[in-house]
Image (spheres, rainbow, N blue to C red):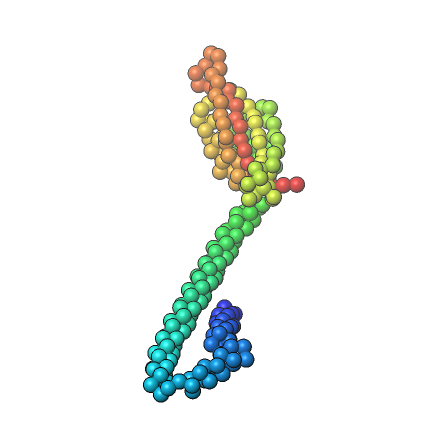
Length: 218
């Protein structure tokens, strides 16, 4: 309703200003133009008066039609402006609804990550999986770093970087270890694996693994 009332007020102000200016131009500030015209009119001969009346009627018709054309042009302009405002209002409402939906999804993701990443203990996590898979971990190193500034999760989480060695391991057992790490619920992902052959055997290898994950900030 505020937009409609604003439209009405604006139209009313423009109408008042317009009519006041027209009256002032035609009649003069103190009606001096009208007095001069009346006095001049009565000094004319009857045929001249008739001609003046006819001309005045034609002029009046022209002025009325010109006034109406200007009036409706102003109405059309104000209608276009009002439509633009309503379109902008609808767009803002749609964007707000989209934002609320995306923000709800984001908060759901944050809650899920906080539930898993907040409880993650890196060394016990990897040692548990290693014991289940019959793998021996050596030289496990853990470090933490802030997320990039443009990452929306940067205020609540930080990145975990993990490096380790798995010596004398078969390819099937290595793959099982990697699979269990990534589905272990800790949001840990294997970033890089380097495999080196061992001297004297073609079935077992030494592997260098790098992994990344998330941890609650602070």
